[in-house]
Amino acid sequence: MPRLHDDIKQSKPFPTPEDELFVQLLRTTDQLMHGLVAALKPSDLSPEQYNVLRILRGAGKDGHPCGEIAGRMITRDPDVTRLIDRLEKRGLVERRRDDVDRRVVRVTITNAGAKLIAPLDQQLIELHRAQLGHLGRRRIDDLIALLEAARHHD
Image (cartoon, rainbow, N blue to C red; front, side, top):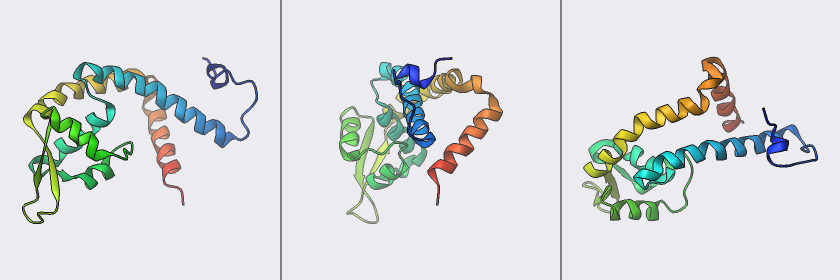
């Protein structure tokens, strides 16, 4: 199995184990994202757009305000409004004023948006299984716990 040092052609050791771990996480994320990008390409969706559509599908007919969508995204996007603009131009989402507070704009997924992402669900489950299934359930559970601990330190 190739080592990270070989992959990135690094001759010196990392200054700290934490530094090496950080680079390992970045490199692994990049590698896994290539598969996701390729899987979404036929649908002409970026991973961020797909994430927004999944969030809105889960929100149901009430949708979410832009700020709520931004807070639920897997990777932060500083310009969620522009992301939603692109999806709206394609007819995949729509905006409407909130019934209670007219200052709030709610975003909902359209039938076209739901129809576009529905077949991707099983495809991405299979992709993730192909990418990570070789680790086995126990190691996957351990890795999930370690990553959660890394994100939520005191």
